Length: 386
Image 1 (tube, rainbow, N blue to C red):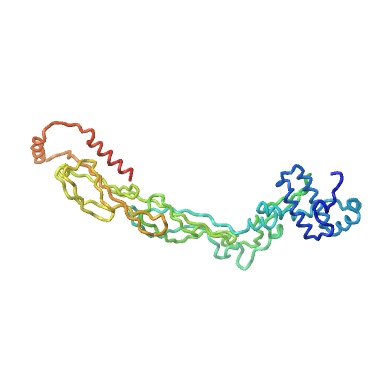
Image 2: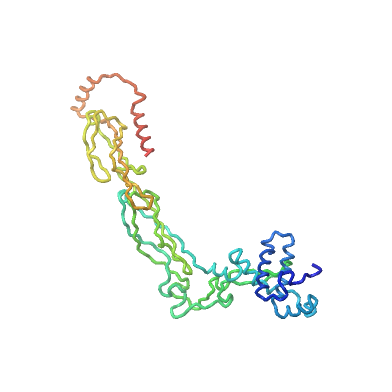
């Protein structure tokens, strides 16, 4: 710009404006015309002009010369625009709009409370423990504040000191010139790695790391009805936070062992039961295992392989996912009947079967609709629907 505009006109303030008014006008215009924010085609020039005006009017000596002699007076006195003084306020503008990275707000973000990391523990339990619930004590290793230095990292009797490179801010600022003016580059302090402090004498127990690995015994309450890959959250039992942050959580992943007899399908339990041809033909009352103990089971006469008999409320307790702790009932136990044909017969058994065969005849009647294959399909279909 060949002809410089009046600095008061640039900032839109009266000639008797005090520094607070000038600063307020500068911040408003800088927010409006900063090249990284504004879409105006002349934003670069306007931003440079605003900074130049603010540098002069915010400095008592430069403002006095400008009020008496104008732009020529500044040039004749060697007080041309340098572009440095206004950038502390530009940094504040960036903090307001971008959440830090320029100055104090950025420091607060880096050194503010930081939540601890979450941890995982794999807990193996039996089939019965998964059905009825159990309380287990588990041992975990996790980082905890060093008991010798109370988490300061300094040898007992000494204290960390403020970093001399960044004066405790945790960051260093460098001003760089460009054709658009001066810009502040903010980076993590290389001396203290952003902590803002140095430890002259490291704690011998933690070697200055502030944390040590510790083994802790924690009680885990496993609710009734859990299944494989159920995840239990223990709030606050994870790694400790930093700078006053809350600890993370411990997530307990459940692994349920297979049972010798039972198979679980959702909230139901399935049991395969073999009976002989006499029991199937004549019917019987047998004892079958359930998760609650042995129970009587009636086999109706004429039972075929693939028949499913249901024992109500002998299945898995249903998990209450509402968080109210109310009972949700239980599933059922399904007994899948398999009729076995003896592979070897005694002489007496053979004679009895031969007599029986005479009364049954030899006619073979295909039964595509109600045969054994369809019974098995029906049973399997019910199994996968449950």
